Length: 341
Length: 290
Image (cartoon, rainbow over all chains, first blue to last red; front, side, top):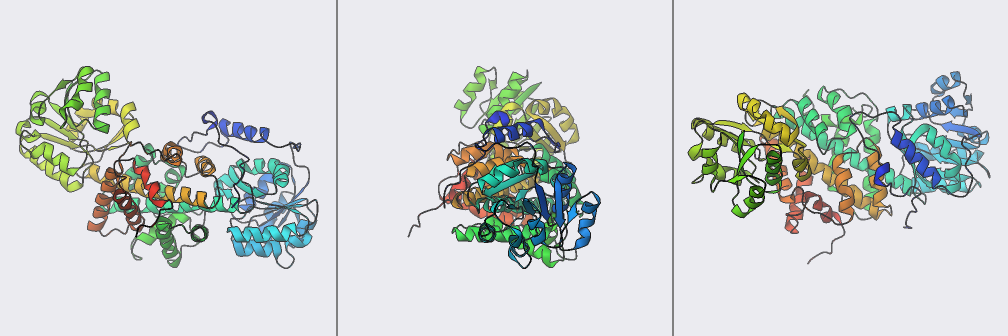
């Protein structure tokens, strides 16, 4: 595979974001990061604001707040969602509506898509009345769904065949970062499209990476979520073990938060996991999908990943317990016997 | 306060230096006596045996590498037990709960006072006094030890009866060992998929799974630098002890079990004295030996 040319080179230490116990909304350092990123940008002069018409396909947990942020920033937004009623809040904010992805694409300069899985992403892009049918030269399609590499390449082909530009741009971050405009975009594909939409990405996110050829963004997202899924499973084992040996799991969460393995995810979700509550920020079924795709990626490069494989089994068990729509932290239930609390 | 300090390895040396620099009088002992010299240069006294140190000091801290060493220092000839009547013993080694209970019983039945206090944190937090101390046992001794704990660490917990500190430490370290494996799998997959692993580090550092361990060790791992802050053999020991706890209590731990296998493989490859992040090496492309 070609070496990815990183748009955002290694950040020198002074620019590094140092997380504190709770996630601040727009830390000063992240502004420096974005400035650094756009300073390093290419020749094409980048307008501070994006003045074109923006389409948004898919208004689920992620798409709705992302589209809302674009609206609040004053963008001209046209929406579509498979279940039309989900569009109403956006329409009430002033968004336009079209009844198919094709019509959205035809009426917009850049169209974003945020779908739940590879199947929907392909269907929305390339299916009947799909976005590709409304694409053409001068337009762009930015798929922010999380899919496998071959799905992304397939969508890329279909979009490019119309003369339009394509950017894959899956995000790291779930519901709250989407609401707060704190997503991390892991993009790859047409560099000129990346440059054109940078301002839009900056509205929805706190940082963005350009990782080179199509597939690299998808792969990066899968790697990150593979690590995350394994970490959540490990944390779950720890919480359960602490309970079973007579420790207070809340104290474990506090001890973890003080040391080298302190991660925002643990501090944020630990307390509710201890109470067997899993309010959905990132549905378990999507985490399992990502693990499945990551294992597929690993297989394609002949890499053994026993930890991720073991974690994946736990998510499958959790799904069999009916926990697909709970937050992925519900994986802890998979370690319990079904009748336990 | 005069403190006895037994065990001057990676952790013990840094901890006793901290105590000395903060005005404590310290008497040290180490199995290899020459390791005491550096401490003597900083003002410490030396005891030739654990018993000698305990004879001299009211409060004694031990920092040994594993259950065998922790037991030996207490029970062997010229060991702690011989002089423990009326004295205090704080074992900051990481051991299994049974070993800790055994030591506690022996100490208290001879009229001594006992506190287990394993720590979370490795070489650097030991040097900078940023350890997290997980104490359990005699509450009164815990209170007495607080001035020393405040120098050694940034936060102390009192967790109740002997065994709870040991258990808490093992739970933390089993999560850590699994995380290091997950991280290593991710770094290898990034590389094999044609990504720049340094980009992965940058992405991780911005999100919900950012943590000091990834941030601190990631770059070194990518340079094949495994200078030991926490030796792999000790991490694997902790995984094994935690899995044994899970075993005793019928707790399902498939991810930790898989992680333990990777650490065992690392040991079989001769990596046990390197930092535990060297488990990364087991996941790179290896030539098959027939």
